[in-house]
Image (cartoon, rainbow, N blue to C red):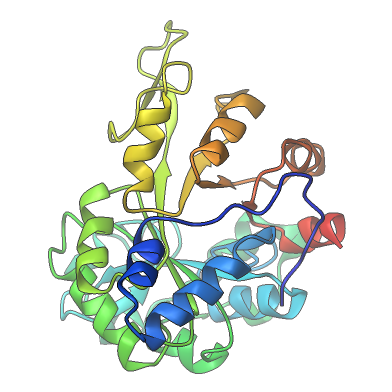
Length: 315
């Protein structure tokens, strides 16, 4: 499943949670699994954003199946909880955009949610890629995705709206551990919430964590950028110490490349993060020219709605 490209920089040696485990000398099978997963992450990663969501309705089994068949390294998915505490795969907090219902997800039970049509909207929005089989597609549960793709597939999971569901991390980790995905080295956890990532780390330190950041100008007329949650300063002001604070718990930083069509990071940002032992995964990149630019900068992975395009460039 791995798409590899030759990178000019030397392979970095991961520190942090992996080094702590190694130094203790504990014969921990999970730590060995983490070691293997971190080694695998040294290769360039094609992350299928919400599945192959440029070709099929996002966060549905058809989209994930397409990404899997294309050979994406990771299936990327957002996890939220229903009114009755079930883990489902959906990005928005409301159902308005991607189903035939309206209102907050948290107001619906799983049974109610899975009666909805989560596919027809794609056919309306993307007539050139519409398929009749998308109509009536369900919002899947996490279990349904795992049932389909198993423990040999790797999952890049975001704890979505974690502040709304304080038990989300515990429920998610229980599900992943129970299905053997942590032991298989099949999961990376991402979040914009530093608190959420630290919760995951406290539950099980043998999971690679990715700190998501979103850079944008705080004011319309401002040239200075800010980060959405304040986890780092803007790229023009970020220091090695800022990156090291992230590296204390995460192995990678996931950043936007642009805001309203304008770049928010540059090659120096990528290099500085990597010099501080952080992988750099960039979202969400769909155009080939930008893919080629980022590959030239030596990023470690990209989120894309069109994994087939990126795979062709990296083979």
